[in-house]
Image 1: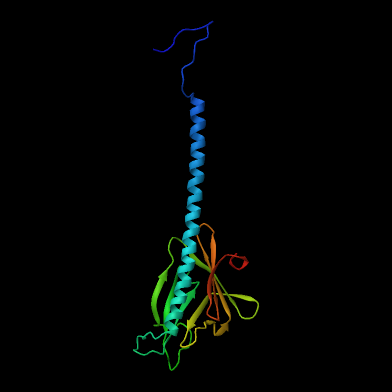
Image 2: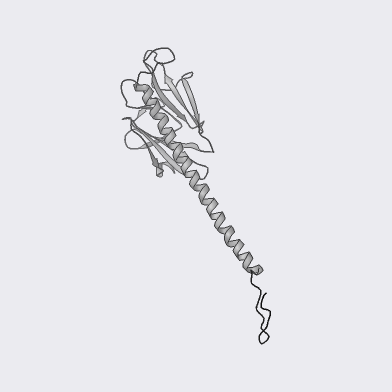
Length: 198
């Protein structure tokens, strides 16, 4: 039984929250939840973009593997090259192609050579293509990266010109960026964005 006696006109108050205390608690909880949800969405966006950059690098590696191994082409020969075409007119996709010999592979993507088109999902796009010939980086709208047996080196071509390095910038809707770097020596790597992607 609760103590209901009052001493000198002072009665004990009921235990519990006042309306102000309840509103402050709800506001703090809402603030923490909103921050956690926003940070989680940004973290997920970073993870998805990093995975996408590695998938693009693996696609280029797959073209390299096809180009230097004994993969039978659609014309039942073994002398075709293989490559990847990136084009900013379709920034949410890129194409794996078979560089058919006529009489030798021309190291560029021609009509009818596409094998598979890869789609970039969730609003991610290839935002910039930067090619290096000597020391300066030239921005272009499309590039063909191909590999021809028996050499593992990459042939990086755009507009009839050969380059020594290609940098592909991938951007997410949240503004995050990653960069895939392909060297003419056949090295393929993924890096965080720098001034080239900005």
